[in-house]
Length: 565
Image 1 (cartoon, rainbow, N blue to C red):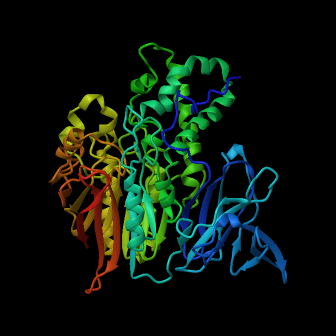
Image 2: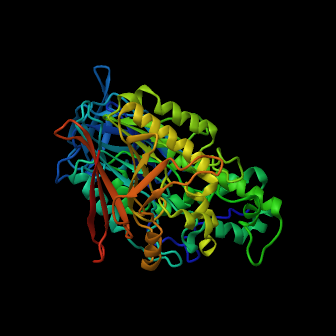
Image 3: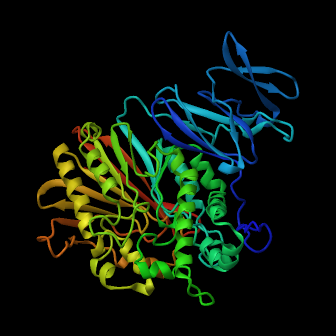
C-alpha cells in the first residue's frame, strides 16, 4: 500500500523552516504541579528531570555532561558526569519522572504530570534517553537555563500577568514566504520582562488549509480517488492523522515559537483552522461540496465520509498536540476550567460541537457544554474568584450586524456564520450572555471574554438592561503572525462596530445588551498582555495592553493600554 505521505523533503511540499523534532511545551500548572509535553526526535525510553536550580553554570556546555542516577539512602539521586574529567556532581532537590517509552504510534509524544513542586518556584528541566545504542548524546532536551524553565503558581497573589494570542500562520497565503515570526520574540520578551506567568492560545494555533503549498485539504482533493482505492477503510483516519501531524510539526518548528512554549505554561483551544476553515458552519449542501474541484465532481456520500474521517483525525491530533497538556477532561470533552491565583477561567470549545444544521439554541456549544458552563458560573470557584475570564475563540461582539447577516462577502458565508452575531446564533448567544451577566451581577464582579479569530485587535464594554451596573468586556487579540494585506485589514477594521445593541430573535423582546468599542481597532499583527491587580481602593483592575506590528520592518510597539474595572 502506498503511504500517501503529505510532507515531501524534496521539492513537492517542502517546509520553509525546519520541522519540529524534539521540543517541550509547558502545560497546565498549579502551585504544586505541572504538565510537560514532549516530542522526541526518535523512539526511545525517556525520563525528564526537574530542578529548582540551574543544572549548569553560565559558561558550562550541556554536551560536556552526561546524566546519571543512583540510589542513595533508599532515594534516587540525579547526577551529572563530566565526559572529559569524570567529575560527578549531585544535583540537589531534582525530581525525576518515571520512564516512558515514546513510540511512533503516539507520534513520539508524551505528557508527564509532575507533582510535589513548591508554590511560586522557578524550575528548570531537561530530558534524556535511556537506550544509548544509536545515540551520540543521551540528552534529548538539553539543560538550557534560558528557555527550558517555568514557574509554578504563587500561593498568595496580589498581581497576575498572562499573555493572549491567536491565529499563527507565518506564511503568505499563496507563496511560502516567512512573515511576522518576530512577533514571537517580542511576545516572549514582554512576558519575561513583566513576570508573565502563563499564556492563552485561543484558536488557530495552526492552519491545516491556510497556505496553498501545504494545505492537507487540497492534498486530499488531489489524491482522493487513489486514496479511496488503495487505503483500507480502517486505516484511513490513521493516514490522515499523519497529515495533521505534519501540519503541527511544520507550524511549530520555529525556534521563536518553541522558545515561548517551552518557558510559559500555555492553555490552548482549537478553532476551525485546526480542522478546516469554517468547520461546523456549513449547511448540508455546502458540506457535500467541500471536496469538489473543477476536475472532480459527484460522489457525495464518499466525500461526506471522508469529511467525517478527516474530522476524526483532526480531533485526535488536536488532543495529541494541544489538549493533552490542558487540564484533564472526560473523553470527547474539550472545554475546561482552571484557576490561576485569584482568577477563574473557563475555556469554551466552539468547534467540537458546532453544527449549523441543528436547532437555533444548540448550534455552537451544544447543550451539555452550555450546562457545564452555567454550572461553573454558579460554582464556589467563581464565587471565590476576584476576576472571571471566559475564553470564546470567536468574539461575542465584533462586526456590524448587517455585514454578518446580509452580505456574503466574496463567498465567505461560513465565516459570517462563525460569528456569534449571525442571526442563526442569536438565541444561543443570548443564553450565554444572560447567564454571564446574571453570574457577574450575583458575584458583584466584572467578567471578561477573551477571543481571537477575526484578525483584528479590539476591546468592547457590554451592558445589560436587566443588570445596568454590571460590566462585561470583550477583549480580542488576532492575529499574531497571519499575514493580512493592508487593504483587507482596513476593510475588516471598517466593519468593526463602535456602539449599538445586539439584535435578538424576532420571537423575543427588544435587545437586552448594549456595547461600546473602547479602542481604535488594531489592523496589524498583535498579541496582548493582561495584568490583574488590586488598586489603591481595593478594587480588582484588569489592564489590557495590546502590542502590534509597527510600520518599520520586524518591530513591535505597544498600541493601547486600557484599565478596566
